[in-house]
Length: 285
Length: 349
Picture (cartoon, chains in turn brown, yellow):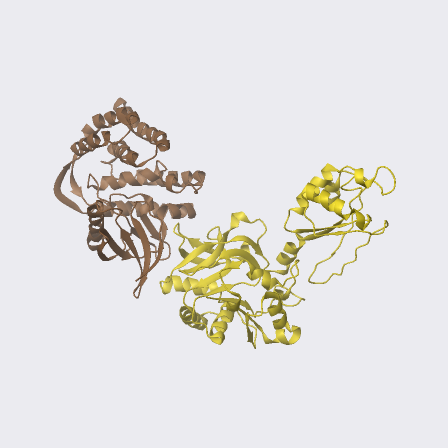
């Protein structure tokens, strides 16, 4: 086994490329001993998806090894060559975007296709998370958290489903040669339901979250393309989800706040306010 | 680590002149020497230039290459012109018995890059950084944000990153295997190195990264070469009446008291700081004024090659030869009114 190079990652875990007699592979190493159980859960989620849900078109890199190195958990997986969906959307033309939109809907319905008997009280889950977040976010967000708490009381009870947990477009790799999508960086999440995946896709499509990781992409071009995808996708996602979308997307951005810098708080405040105000308008109507 | 520089093609894009790698750069070196000058990390003894026997017979170029680049370089002579660059690389690996990683460098362009050998890579640049290249003539690279190459396509713009003609291969055996496989299926004249690499990526699961180069100049056709050469100029400037207000040796205003022509001096400073210009001064002032002038030029921050003194106070004529390889004309003369401040205007007219 030979180390080749470190790759760019966003989770804080070390991602490295290695080669062995059998070919190249990727090693993901936990960022700390405390993080070991979470990384292991993420790996198990990836294995579950590979064993039970993936198909010819939507796949995940195969896990080939796991273990500990200097006390840190790691797992090795198949090396995939492709573009993140953000990159592919930027490079491709409008006609291809229609296909991508259809494929995104397929990805969402695939992750949600596995449901469990366990019932999730979404309102309660939100309330618990909000209590936790109040200790982690700056004071300027307290009022908005209260609004979210109040509005989230309407959330229904749902059966638990499989969900990716961090289905931003950055975590979908597209291989344009084989025309295969690979889902990477599965996450454990406080609500294991595929509605979380829908909201995360909108984090990029509607709220331009990708600009934080890809400031090099021309925002004008990306806005045109993302609006095109948004218009196509919004009509086709599950109708029951739509009334709750502002709550899910607001919650997603609240969860990001503890990991962001103060300079980004204004953007987050605007996005959360905008989404929560949609709920007030809905009430008025 | 070896560097292969294939020069065994027909040089068809440079009609009616000697093989392009032998053309003379404005600084006096061979094109091929300039093509490899910016490649850092490879020792001279590891440079292998592959050329045709007929070139050696006609031009005695091997001696010249060694003199210009270094006596340690290796030369591989081929009997027949190769149909493609990949064929030249293939034959070089075989003839030179290369068993280690190697870098292939086009002989008809220049760029800067540090070679290091952790993984195979292709050198690239970005279309948006160059206004003078012909986009239809390039091969394009589709890369992801980690720098891995997914596709390389000839003459079709699939991205803004293009291949500049520098390829690093970790394993010569894999190159040989892929070349032998593809040469049975593809007409050898079309067997670009990019096809070999794309096949290795897609069918052999090999990894190639993109490595960005700097200061890229393309000399792929005679037109590109002449355009590049045209950027270089050797200026012969008179001094008095242009950069200093006209004065005389024996009466007022005296040379020792003359003032500078600020506008023209500013233009001269601009010209002297460009890497494309060489500046000579020619003056009828005698040698006894050299120290004074040198001091003045130093004070003004002007870089120049030579100060030629003691010329006749008379008409000056430059005579220069021209040919297929130099373009025409190879010299110009500008007459400027004494003490005019319009040097810039006259140079551009």
